[in-house]
Length: 518
Image 1 (cartoon, rainbow, N blue to C red):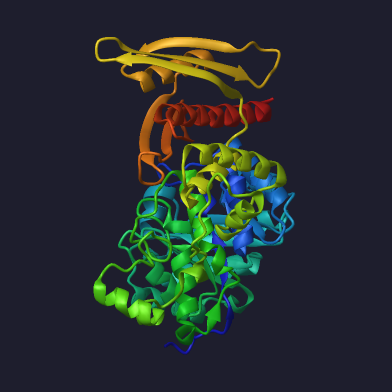
Image 2: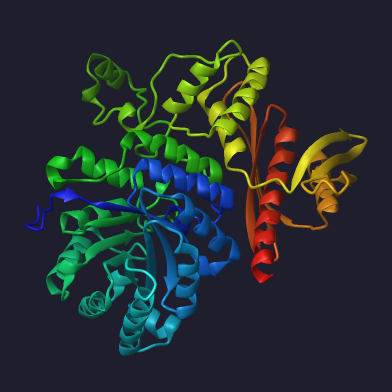
């Protein structure tokens, strides 16, 4: 263990809503982002990076909404080292109780030469000027040296020292392309601590990517070398192979506190519920053998393992499932279950809903319980997600019908109601290559747009013929992308709901852009 071993608390900077959401297929609508932000606040992260405000009107609106809701932790917005970006960042963050402007600029030779087309001195000057500009609006400014690990260490220390002098309270050392090995990454963090002027006045952060599968290892190695903020995402989602996984980093230093002497503010019993929420809203399933939150993380099939666990759990479990919020209960919910049992189950699963949403979800639970003998935890999660994280309904499904057969072809009839009561209910019948294609075409005809269907996935939430079908879709229109999700015991209905969910996300975000232009 290095002499730089720490004591105390390491800050957790969660970038699920920014870096995580940038991953292909992981986009979230504004309402879903708000739900995830609320859960991250409950989880106990120190900083929520809510988005990249200058990237789109929708992202700016989402960051602004999150900044207005979150009260127990800092809300950050990412900005390039440009005044227009910083202006947009502050517009989004101004209503936050604790705002942070997060500025980044590349410092590696390859980035400076080929992407920025700037000299090192120009990069240094722009880094300082952008931090000074941001300080006019916000006391809390973080500066990230993009691709820091592949940068000249001495140059990074010069830049860090200069931006700290200009007012940056946090300097971030990213392994942007996941190139580092743990030993050398720890050595680089020690070098930065020892050679950066005024480093004692700033928090030293790390941001590791997982291209070689070492993001968590590098992050934990950095903590051992003196880093006091970690940047990570729930389930490790993110660009390319992803980011350091929040749950792995948190539980790594908590289970091995004897090695690190530090901890975080994270309420680990909320980890599983947060993981499930992020998986649901992004449509990205957690691999079964994923550490901490995978379905197999606490299962034992080998006979020798089962025997050991039955005798004493510690023989093969270094932490309990309850410590990360995975409930172990024999309670079965069905049509005779009451509201109190249902609310208790929501709490066990880490699912938080307001009173109105609770009424809606409980009614849906009763309807589902009439169709299924037993309602599983996954069923309940699906109901809550469908009720709480969907975009506002510009269009509401009023009726659907399909006609299909081997000799008939397929047609779909859709009737939608617009949120504006002055507009009439609209009906369309279209033919297609199967009932789902026909139904989607009917929806497109009603809304007057023809988005491209980029992803369609259909699965069962649980096993058995009575399982709910869960459909995930991704649509694209004019270079922008939206996800949708639908759940029903009828797979055709779940598909229609999913497509309409994506359409409503599109309509809402486009309306936000129109309002901003207006």
